Image 1 (cartoon, rainbow, N blue to C red):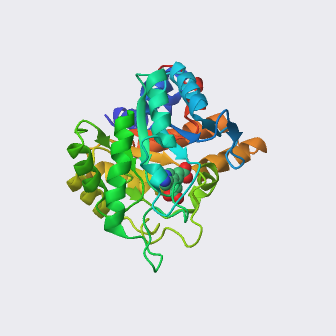
Image 2: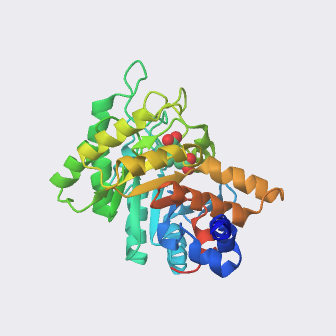
Image 3: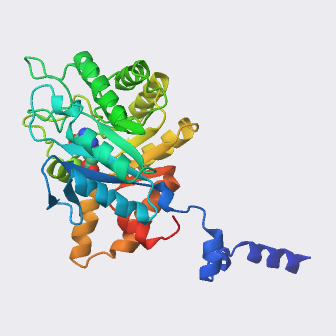
Length: 334
Ligand code: PBG
């Protein structure tokens, strides 16, 4: 009797027996990363015939409209299904009018991609910071503060012109109060009731966006974004932001950045289980890995797969990542 108990206890205490071979490990794997989980950001410049490297993001380029469409076609061949489009306009002004011009750079890019790769899911970043002279995400008053409600009217136009151009999903990224509700109303009134909204619902005021501001040329000319983006110290407030966006009609939620905020990913997944959740693996997270890999300090492929798997394990359904094309080539199965 006694011996049997001991044997049983010993048998129960050996989780390593399920890790013995690659086959067993594959069978026991709880979280799987697939090509369908990835969203590839694409930077499109108004300039013609351009492929320009982004110095702080090795492997990332700004493309002219035609080349952006060709790049997306190449991405589609690896099995990738979704891109997130950012535009870099020729001129900037106080209201960011290039963001809602019918022939704005993002609108032109969306049309070109839609024509060349009809099945691609096109997500448009819906914000003003790349298009305003001052680089802020909204209209400023005389005290140089972002004016909330006047900005909402502009964001409606941005979203509608992006939907007109062929975007499947618009993604407001400015953390302006009421942006999701205003955009939903604008889209519905324009006959775009079937276009979804991916809200950057919890976007933190993060230093990890540094390289992006190089890539998209949207750094604030003065000040910072702390009056609208969230304080990195706050988690309960993130749930409040999610609730508001869900009430206003968001179809998908996002946590951004990803790595330093995986607890927020987990809480959002648990508290908003009905909504697809996106984690944004941002430019600074990408740059850190690239810099270390170029120095031979980290094994890029293993580290990237570990990071992205961690984001999924934390509860993300989808990940926006500059590594998407590499990952799609590493893990065939699209
Ligand atoms: C704003 C926007 C930013 C990013 C995505 N959309 C910049 C910001 O808020 O300052 C950052 C993405 C990244 O760092 O990869 N349109």
